[in-house]
Image (cartoon, rainbow, N blue to C red; front, side, top):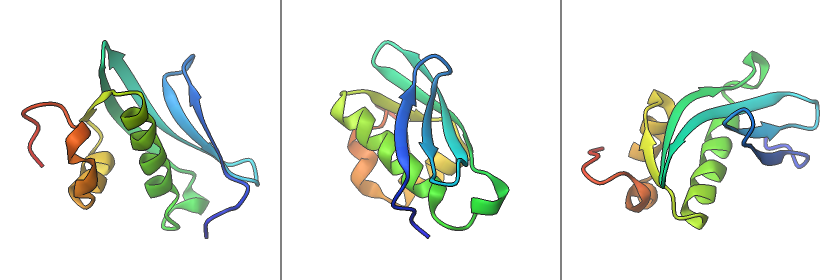
Length: 100
């Protein structure tokens, strides 16, 4: 169910990564930044989009943003931790000492 009209954006005012779908549904990943560390706190996807890979696409785009901007990720959100656990290619941007 990947929507070709998805828009990924960083909402610094509200401290969240957002994925807006063509039907105006907003999914978001809340974060907190402390220097170069970024803590992923909570992922939210509208009920009608759950189970269609929206959260995974949002997390992947947020992780890519962090990698590009040389941020160190601390996955405080259980969904993000589970996603990274299943995608070891992201281990290199995890906070030092973080065990998956």
